[in-house]
Length: 148
Image (cartoon, rainbow, N blue to C red; front, side, top):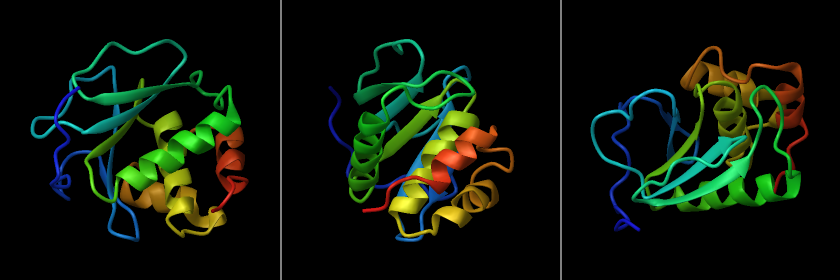
């Protein structure tokens, strides 16, 4: 396991979303090479299959492409962990392409950060990727995401 970097992501770095609290979270697609620059201290990988090993602390959440997490309770706990760690660490959320599942997770993080659930998808599309959160059921998942 890699040493946990204390400094945050550079705010202008590729894929970095700034939440209203100031927390910075990087979203990306795993089928593309990682961006140049610092590595995460912690990552949540949203895939149907186990991701390759990485030299930093990482968790795998079983989440099929274009679908929803297999275990909703575990997804909620994992996203709360990402949100909490983003206060002091560089965290990354990633799926295959970096839009659907990643965008959905980032929108849920926005809800945890105080963005109204009905506005969270628009927030992520404005500040991360205009095509984030790809399916109607992913949008519904965000609207129904439990708040703290």
